[in-house]
Length: 75
Image 1 (tube, helix red, strand yellow):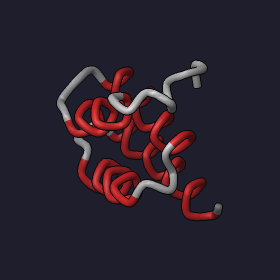
Image 2 (cartoon, helix red, strand yellow):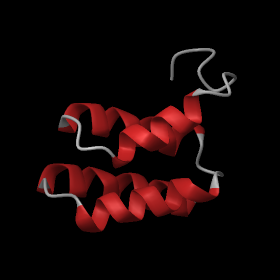
Image 3 (cartoon, one colour):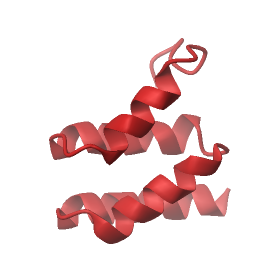
Image 4 (tube, helix red, strand yellow):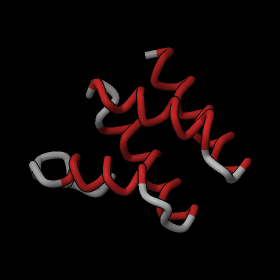
């Protein structure tokens, strides 16, 4: 995570919005990674990861979301 992102109160809402939007899979992958890494304690993070792991149209991104979900749930 690039320093300072987590301290900016606008970052989390932007990440949540991007994680739910039909952006390029690379944008969604980076977004899910940052949510799992920096905001694993936010109640919506698990819900977003679960949704992407179950419902994303791209199987690669679904697999990635499943990996991140497993990491967050282990912690």
